[in-house]
Image (tube, rainbow, N blue to C red; front, side, top):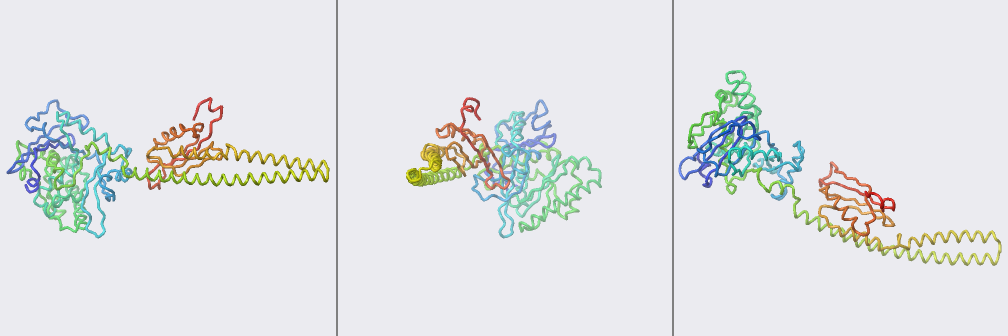
Length: 524
């Protein structure tokens, strides 16, 4: 049973700490050059993870733990496991991709989630995709994991692990692991079933029945028989899944973890499953210093599994650590290469808009010049007609009609003057507006539509962003530029469509020029 432990690199040792109901187990494992690894362990009572140790004085001097790195094991209620298809993205972007997949399975904001994952072997079926277990925990609950170690005077915690991988570490030490082994262990509150082969975890199942319930009813044969039947059904389903999906030979034995009140369970499991059911004996592969009762061994098993965690640079890749300091930052950062591509796309878009606007302004100049020539020719023709009518007819009524026509002509000329003046014909106004828009340099804002009124006093902007807080910053920077200085955006809409593949917020905003009354009062 020393196979896996001897293959691992020699290291100083590691401390494991796990809470099991109102009890906690702490274990120290030190590897030696020859012989079994040395195990020192003890248990103590705790009120809760948050309150730390419940006793005033706990003597850990015999364990020699304070200078060794410590792995803390999460309780079953502080994290969730979800089997997912591995996203087809670079490794450094996996957590960010998983964040959007798991947000529906948690009841707190996804920004408060700490996420890690470990891959499991793909199914034997052709075309099967890569799969992984996503580990999701609420950040405040993870932060509380430091309370118990600190109450014990230990400040060397560098790993926060999960029970399933700690049991994988135990199962990998068994000789039967070479062909596949199933390990069933009960804590006070629940049970854990792991199936491993050659040190690789293939399948996990959590069982609702805990050690407390089994111990309290150990003398009730009918109760034990009924519970054993339910547990056997869960185990059989897992074994069937393992054999069919991984095309592996059947598991021949079930290893039952230590613990008090489980004496009647092996016989019932054997009868229901038809498998050899063996109790795990820690003496087979550890040199245990000090006395450990069966009850203490059950309460310390997860801590022992945490203490034999494989090295980060070893063969085992199925490792998680929710204490990684850079995890939260890297999970929330938008990948840098996407930002570079988005910036380049925005530059190309703004250059295209500038060229389009320049061509459009040039075309408007030509159209207005032609209209002015036509209007001038029309005025000359009407003036000649009036002179001809006055000289030939001399009728006042005709003169009045001509006067009305000239009045209408003057009104049209006034409109033309407006068109040729600063209101619309000042084509420089469009250039200034577009230049101001193009100079906006806020990463994370994408414009998809720009609308300008004829007089340049109203603006409509549409676009999208992944971060809503950037929109007010964009608006403040925009109205600081001269073409938009007298405008205020009085209407704003923001939406997050359900079918939005980009997971972005869409926004629309309209502005208008402030009149004298608004400029003298409050601004929106």
